[in-house]
Image (cartoon, rainbow, N blue to C red; front, side):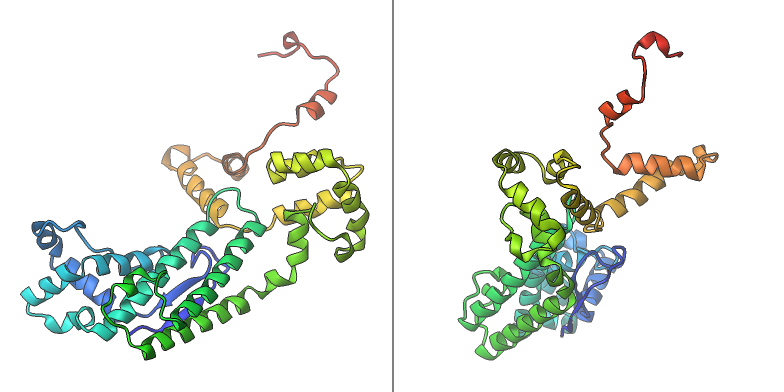
Length: 325
C-alpha cells in the first residue's frame, strides 16, 4: 500500500528538512473523492468532531501527516460515507485490519516526523540547534525499533489502537525503522564531520582543549579559566556572549562563532524574506528601487542594535541644535 522513502532537499521550498515521501494513492484518491462528493455535510450531520478531511500536497511540508491523522480520526464516518455511495471497494484499506495497521503506523511515524520538522523551523535557530534535533530523532528511531522488537507500542498510539498486529508485521516495521535510521545517518553524515567545531560553538567551557585546532587552544584555555565569563555564558544568549568577548583576547573564537552562526540552519529567514518582499513590492510602490528593497528586507528580517559607542566616536560634538530638521 505504501512505499516509504526518505528525501532530503537543500531547497527549503521543496521540502523543509527530512520528510517521508509517501506514495499513497489510496488515501489521496479517497480524500479527493470525499471532497468532490461534499462529504463534509454528512460528517457534520453525524456531529463528528471534525467537519472535513484535509488535502495532501507536497508544497505544504506538514500536510502528509495531517492528512493521515485526519483520515484516521474520521475513519468510521468515511467508511459509512463510501458505503452510502455504494463505493465499498474504495474504503477497503480502512476495513482491512492488516492494511489498517500499515496506515496506523505511518500516521504515528509521520506525527513524529512533523514534530521534528516543526522543531527545526523557527527564529534564532543555529546550526548546532538543528543538529541536536536530528541527533535526538535518530536516537528516537533506534528506541522505536527496539520497542517494536519487544511488542511495545507505547510511542505508536494509532498502531496500539489496532486490536491485533501479528509479529511478522511488527518485524517488518522494525526493519523499516532501522532503514530509516540508516538513511538519516547517511544523509546527515556531514554534521558528524564537524561535531567538534559545533561543540566549541555550543559549549566552549566543556570542550577538551587538546581535541581542538591549535589556533583555538590557547584562547579556550584562557576562556575556561575565567569564572566571570563562565557565569556570563550561562546568563545571556549565546550570540550575545560571543559579542561581549574581547576582540583582542579572543579573535579566533569570535571568528569561529561568526562562521558557525552564519550557517544557514533554518528556512525561517528565507521564508520571511519572500513574505516581506511580497508585501513591499506591490502596485502602490512601483518606483521602489532594488537598493531600497534590499534595505527593507534586511531591516525586516534582521535584528540590528546600533553600536552607539562607535557612532559617538565618529562625532566631534553632540548636541541636538547641531542637527537641522
